[in-house]
Image (cartoon, rainbow over all chains, first blue to last red; front, side, top):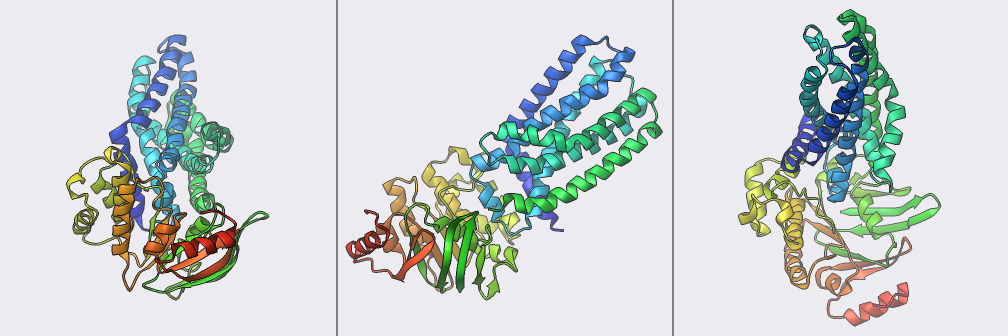
Length: 224
Length: 234
C-alpha cells in the first residue's frame, strides 16, 4: 500500500492547520463551552456525574468533530485544490485515508486538551481505568472520522453543505456512537475493562467495516 | 499519441459529449473552442481520467485510459483557472507536496529548477496566500510541469488574468511546446488560441463540428468560421 500518499496528505493538512489554526480552535472552543456548561449542572464527583460523563464526553467529541469534518473538504474545494488532489497518480482510496488521518489527528488533539479538563472539572477518579478509556476514545474517534470523512466529501458539493453533513452523519454513525457511549459508561461506572469489553469488540468491528466501506466508496463519491 | 474514438458522456438525459473522435500526436498544440456548456471541460476531465465516458474509448500512449488510470495521470499536467495551490503552504511546500504525491526523485533539485523556470525562486518561502493571481498561476504552471508530463491540459488558463500576465503566459506556454509533448487547451480567446496552437477543434453541444490546422495570420477567417458553426458573435 503506498503509504507515502496517505502520509503526504495528512502532513499537508496538519501543516496547513498549524498555520491557520482555524479548525482546531473552533473545535476546542465548542468543546470547552459544552464541558463548562455541563459542569455548572452537576455536583463534581457525585454519582450522577459518573452516569452523565460518558454522554457529555461524546456529545463534545462528536459535535466538535463535525466542525472539523465540515472544514476538511470545504478547505479543498474553496481553494480549488480538490481537482489537483484527484489528478495525483495515486488510488483515490489513498486520498480518503490521508484526509481521514488528518481529521482523526485534529480530533485527537482536541481530546488531549479536553479530557484532562473534564477529569479536573468533574472531579473524576479514573486513573486506574485511564488506558482502556483512552482505547475506547481512540476507537470511537477513528470510526467517527472514518465515516465522517466520506460524508464530508459527499456533502461538500451541495449548497447546504454545513447542514447536510450532520444530517447524513448522525444516523449512519449511530452504531459507533452507541458502542462508544456504552463502552465508556460501562468502564466508568463498573470500573473494570471486562465490563466494557463486549462494547469495545463491537466498536472495533464497526471501525473496520466503516473504514473498508468508506475507502471503497470514495472513488465513486469524487467522480463526476 | 492520444486517440479518442466515439466518445460520449451523458449526465442522465443530458449529453455533454456525443460521439467525439480525435487524434492528437506528439508535438501538437490543440485548442478546443466552443460556447459555454459545449463539453470542452468534460473532454479534458475524461482525458485526465477524472471522469469516465459513457461510451467510446481513449487510448493514451497505446494504453487504454480505463485500464491504467494511475499510469496515465503520471503523464498529465493540468493547468486550470483554479491554481490547485494551498494558501497556507509556501511555494516550496506546495511543490514538495505534489512532488511527493507523484513520487518524484531528486525532489529538492526539481523544485529549485521549477521555481527558477517560473520566476519564483526568490519567493519560495512565502505563503501562497501572499501571492498575486498572476504569481499563483505561474506557480500552478510549475506544479503542472514538476513531473515533466508528456500531456499538458490547459483549461481556460487565461481566465481572470490581466493583460500583462497573459503576455507572460503566452511566452511560457510557447516554451512548453516540444516534439514529445501534446498540449490541449480549452479557451474562449480565439486570438490567443490561434497564436499558440497548431491545431483547432470546434465543439458544439458535445459534438466535434470542425477540426483543422491553425493559421495565426487568419484570425478574421477563423472568427467567421466559428461564428458560422456556433452562431456566436466573436
